[in-house]
Image 1 (cartoon, rainbow, N blue to C red):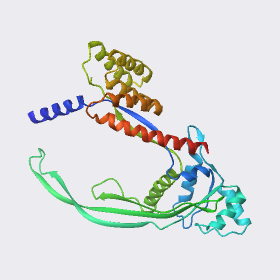
Image 2 (tube, helix red, strand yellow):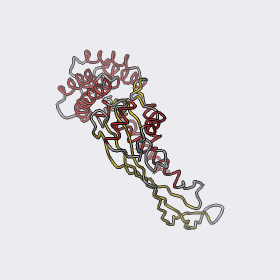
Image 3 (cartoon, rainbow, N blue to C red):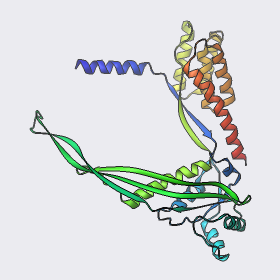
Length: 332
């Protein structure tokens, strides 16, 4: 009982020392920058596509929007197949450059995505897991026994290519491999997925991974606030800090900003805490240039390194660079 109490007390002390964290939502650029210059695209039916990977990719691209605006214009598969049949062009999944350019020009696409999907692999291995059960009603004695279990490994591979119709060259070409493991023991209620179901799940993941390379996407991360004075605060300063942090917890950044600015004046601009926290507010609002200025003010006041400020100083520079690249991609 004493041990449990000590552990609980330790956890409470640790939790009480944890600073509040603010969730940051940052829009980052697409990995494949050239994809932003070819926003009218078409997806050819992939070769040996038993998992519908090409359909999954097309569906994601059709529905992809950023700030309520469609990012891609996708030429329908029906129109694409009609052109291929009319021109008697061979569609073998991974179409060559000349064919892609010809088809793209006929349907008005700037880029064409094609591919080939491998057959899903499945491997089962067996092992035994230990279990414990009571020998009597009061569980004073136990019995250890073993149950037979299965570990199922399923893999899927695909070659995907994206061709720039205008320039007649390859924007992206890569072989993607995805694997996943499932476990099942005889005393489990969960069942192992079949090869087909597992392959569908892997194809979903593969489609998400590929399309994410083509489009800007949001990244979420948390940033800690500084909630302890760094210099001697008077009663009013301590109250201002307390109130400001509380407003941030309630997502009232407008009120928190006002009180942090009051705290800057109250501490005669000698405390880095309000400057840093103002930077966090601006970063959360996506106002990176303003956030950078506040972080720089905080950094100038630091005598010994403060981990949160050093991380923010470096992070905001990277965010500004990525934000410029993202805006350029969105404007194309």
